[in-house]
Length: 324
Ligand code: F6P
Image 1 (cartoon, rainbow, N blue to C red):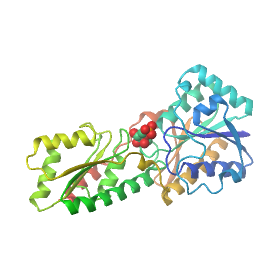
Image 2 (spheres, rainbow, N blue to C red):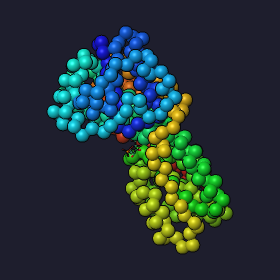
Image 3 (cartoon, helix red, strand yellow):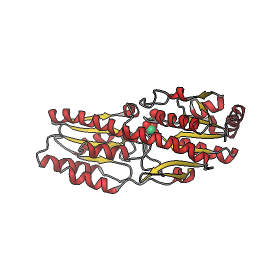
Image 4 (spheres, rainbow, N blue to C red):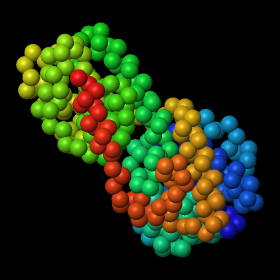
C-alpha cells in the first residue's frame, strides 16, 4: 500500500477535520502518500483529488465541518459511476481508501470494495450516533452539547412565562441526541423512535408536573419519532387538553451540526483516524473502525450498516423517574 485516498461523505459532523488530520499525519508517519478526495463520492467520479501534506491539515483540529467538503451522490449508486470513480483512483495511483461518514457512506464503500477489490476502511462520522460497532460516532458529543445548551436557554424562557416547550432535535431514525440532551437538560419527557410514547403518556407526564406545582415543562422530541414532528405533536396535545398553558415549539435543526468540536470528539476522531491508517497497514479492509469500551475495534461494513445500535432503555426509565 503506497497511496491512500481519504474523503468525507454524507452529512458533516464536528470532528471530521480532526479525523482527517490524524489520517494525513498517520500516513506521513508511516511513509504513505495521501490524497484528499473532495466532495466525497462525487469528487471521486469527477477526479477532484488533491495531494495532502502535513501543512494541509494544520489548524483544522478545532474546526467543525469538513475542509474536504461533502456531498450526497446519486451517480455513485450506479455501476457506471463507480467504474468512473475507480478509473480516477487508478490514474492517481491510489491503492486504498479511508471513508469518513455515516451508514450511507459505508453502504457505498462496501459495494465499491466488493466490486473493485480496493481496500477500504470506514471512520464513523455523524452526529446521529446511529452506527453499530462503536460506542460513539464523531460529532455526536458536540451535537449533544449544542442541543443541551439550547435546551438550557429555552428553559429560561419556559420558566419565566410558565410555558410548555416542545423541542425537536436531529438524529434521523435514532433517539440518541434526544435522550442525552433530554436527560442533561432535565426534560419532563423525551420522545424517541426506539420506544413508543403515546400522546396520552406525554399529557400524563405534563399533568403530573402541574399537579406538583411545576409551572413550565420541556418535551424533547427526536425528529424520527413516530408520533410526528414537534409541531404535529404539540397540536395533538393541544387538541386533547383544555386550559393548556402557553405552548411553543422549537426545531433546533442544523445548528446541531456545527460548532467547535468538543474535546471528546477531537480525541475520538484522532484515535479513529490513526487507527484506520494502521488497520489498512495491517491488511484490514471492508471494515469500520470504532471504539467500544475504550478499545479500538473493527466491524464489517455489513454489520455496521445493518445491525441496530440499541438505545440504553435505562436512560428512558431515568427520564420518567427524575422528572417528577
Ligand atoms: O445524519 C445527520 C443529519 O443531520 C440527521 O440528523 C438529519 O436527519 C439529516 O442529517 C439532515 O440532512 P441534510 O443536512 O441533508 O438536511
